[in-house]
Image 1 (cartoon, one colour):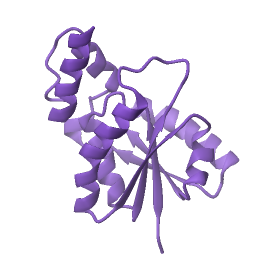
Image 2: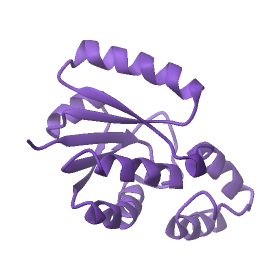
Image 3: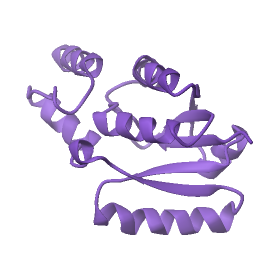
Image 4: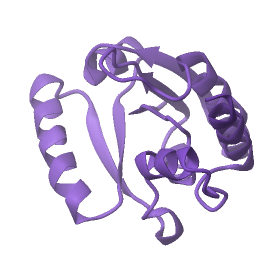
Length: 166
């Protein structure tokens, strides 16, 4: 039986925490859809195209290591609707701590009510990635700080270039 997992996020920027979840998800499925959420109310650092390129460069080798087919898409509607469109049966969500658990349980319940055919799978972060958030990475990078410990080298370099432009 083939399993398609759907992992949605803003991925702005892609962090080592995202890579941690991508690796865990690849262990669970034959096909992984990385879905970049587009929110017109937010102004991301990287365009959707830049985020897709970064995800492909970073997640591609991880997926290949597990023989997982990888697809990268964008969406601007409900996660469950996008997951259905892409044939997913699993919604992947990451957990860093107890605070995440409370929110994720609420989301899982709402998603189950609206789309009972989609199974939410909550994956705990590994200890080295547990403290990483894209929000904090953006703040550190915007102030010229070193984000090397929190993001892949390619993302670090792109963040430096992006903030040098501003």
